[in-house]
Image 1 (cartoon, helix red, strand yellow):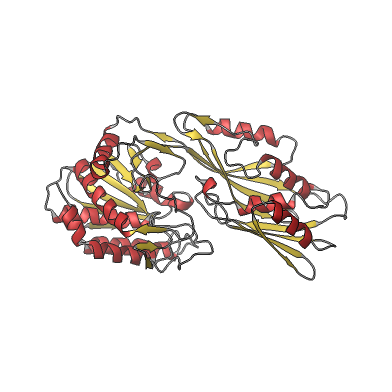
Image 2 (tube, rainbow, N blue to C red; image 1 turned 180 degrees about the vertical axis):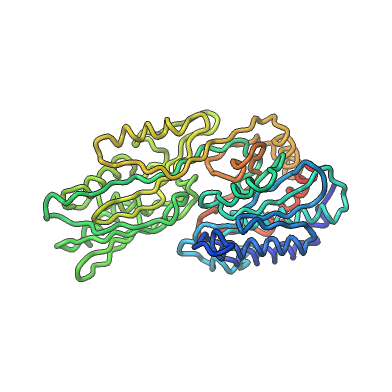
Length: 462
């Protein structure tokens, strides 16, 4: 069945719907009645469900936690898991992050690739199938999640109240097909400070930076008290190191500002970590003796700017999914304590206990403890699984690409249920823009993935 002509006819509608949903700032916020994740996310969910009804689908809103749009009849369900929430926009965008402006045939904005653009694509893919008046043997259901970026509470609520799809994919990663995802750990490294041992040296009042554990932080700043100007030391450091640090010397304290490059926490090598940049510079200063100085020294020696956790005892790797990924996402340090939020993606043949055991050995005698926040187990489907085979067939037919299914460090909704995988929307070789400034989706790709998803849904539901 060929759906391409109908999708081409809907091109302008697809573009406009994508722009409208991008213009809603759906970052998790303070809960309100009937809005468990805040007003912005709720507005976005209502928009998606209203659009689904206008396109002719049955819809359901599950108390603001999630919703779905449905086509067809039958006992079995083919699901598409999308999410409407986005991470905070960060700074230094070329174009406004919530205006969905089009430049060079690309739609710019937070969520264009992760995951609102793909959500609109699968919605219009289902519309193309509906307009073809094809009798399906299974239902197709697009599930709109609302809390994917910060815990997954929305999809968990949905699956407690609705039957899980028999097979599903999520358009929230890469092509061709993701048949394995690394385990995810989120935790804080915490230390309570005692009084400094002496008054001499530079005192650090606070360090604060980052937005989320799963984002490479693009900004961090430290407030210090120093008897002497630090400008000369900073200038010397900048000549020897390729980092962006700025100094602002006030009457009573000095501010050191660190500017990095944001990236997805599963791909820290694509960004520049503003926290790590700043900590390494602070370690070069004549700091006042005490726990703060010791912590900064430990950070430099055991975390530094490493991506794979080698020095802190968890540099694991396997053949199936590659190296463990270690990302520092947030720091909050004051005179009394420090908390550093860490996001780890560990290889699929390892366990949570192995990772923590390795880290704990390196923490012995430091006074630093681990505050566990979140754990998501790895997932894996063999390449000969029926879902993998069906999606690979469609992908190869559209692209001519003979690449094999892959594994990733990113976490998707595929983890929320059995028999689910990630499928697109990023084509091989394209830049990873999720969680970064100037996130965009090319209009050509938006239409292309709509065609791929239409054929994939037909193959799975016919």
